[in-house]
Image (cartoon, rainbow, N blue to C red; front, side, top):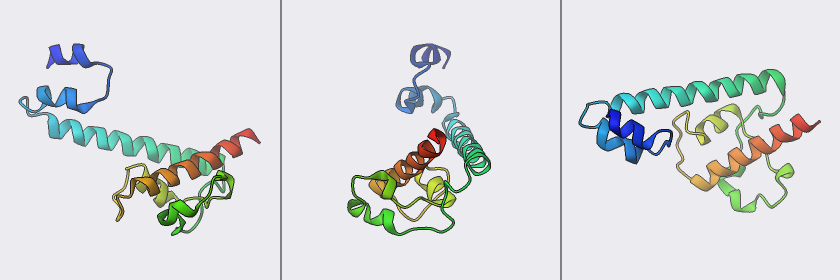
Length: 120
């Protein structure tokens, strides 16, 4: 494992870590810790945005992201995702959809709005 770490660090591609983690019995631990760290990071982001940039998240969920093809090219006209939609799209919460294009639209809409607020 130490040799693998020095070879792949700091790349985050788990496919290079997996052959060393699996025989050592650490793959499940790695995945669990990584998922928890990711959730904590996104929860911190949400807390910061809600405190510093009120209104970036919508109060209700939108079905517009499921119809992402119809959103158009002007990001400023896209609906803004709710906290739950954002967390689901970012992979911090389980959700009913695995539509990667819809998840990408949620993330684009969120960071577009956040960027607009920061530039004010």
